[in-house]
Length: 79
Image (tube, rainbow, N blue to C red):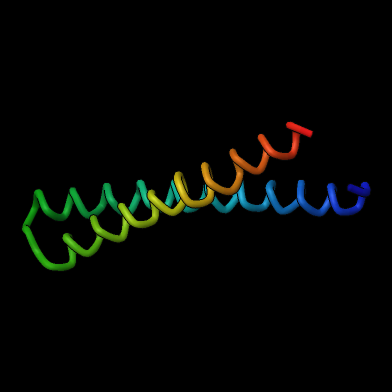
């Protein structure tokens, strides 16, 4: 592969890693807020916050962090 294609793939992996980190942090904060709301007074909004936090954590850690960044880096440096 030429240098420009490799550089483009590496930049894509870096941006995906940043997005994965942001989604993970926002997911953890959202889930924490949902659990705190559930302890004060159980409500539909608190359940929604917990669910959205879990979804963001799943997306950040697994979908972007593992499937895209980790496996992409392994494929990038395996060659």
